[in-house]
Length: 444
Picture 1: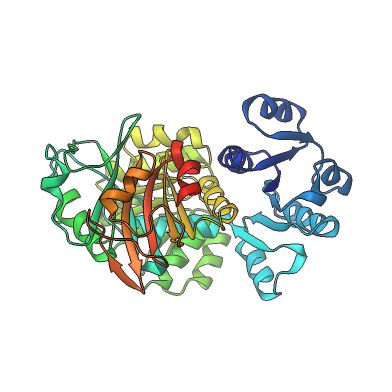
Picture 2: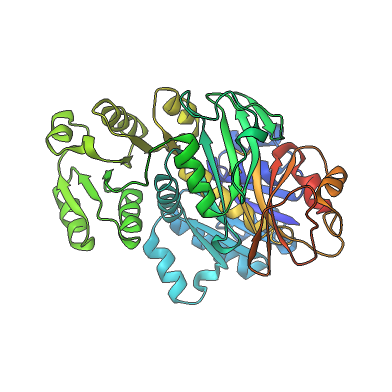
């Protein structure tokens, strides 16, 4: 498939890096230095120019393109790119936008602007924050097979009952599979004799109920889902996050410094207590009993501010902190200094767009640990390497680095074990080492 990506920022680069091995990728960017660097760092054709101009798109071969992805930092530019691409080709177009209002306009006009699919960064990020914040101790959470299967990544604490045991001894849930473990820079595919150590990040796949039980019983005993949620910062991500909690029955608190923005949010969010103050003021946080919150989400405009808010919240006794970071290089730093979860909007966007490029192979994907591994959902066909044999046998035909985590058959969840037989039409959720992903997709 020929893919044209307009915009070589963090999102565009992440998409290009993910697709370079399996597709014919062209990247357009107006910065000559960026184009030169891409030429040497990725296996892509880099074109210098303005992606809104037909001449540049034609230089990139838009007439032969199957997919055009507009991923610049300007919503308007991305919409124009898609319109220009539609004028010159039959390519499927994807526009990345930040404003939910633009997404709602597009949805209400049945695919206007020449855009076939629109990805709203702020809304995706807000939904990711809600999924993660709602599950105690989770670092990543996603749903598969229409909500029948949940994937979650947890860090094993030193006090956890499973620290120091092996997977076979820890595996006590009927509908849960231990899939993978991240230990420092090492990625381990879980097996029965794999040891679970304090500090490990373990990926489990199973029913939502079993994953929640695992979280509360094993990762963080006696910890319940959050009741008290505080969001600091009424940025667009902060606003959408609060609205997401409201829509699921919560009554969160929102702290915003700007009085006009605070008033605007108070009028738009009927079930939210909006406090007009500086969220980096430690005395204010203590006075308003923010220390009693189960989760504090830092969603200010600025990574440094979000770091400060998260550290202050942790210092006054908040159980869990979630911080939005725009600079992906800060992710490890944030979690090293004690922030429980850091969420990067650009990663969330890249993941959603990459899913579309795999439409022929996968129903859904979730990238883990900056794409070191992925959890994918596929519908098994009659020619798949998984079809017809016991899992213990068919996995021998697959590259190492694959774990079958869950199977859905006719809407019923099946927990895979060695003797389970995969049938055509099954939806299978797999954990896959990123280094063998393309090889796995070819055979399953």
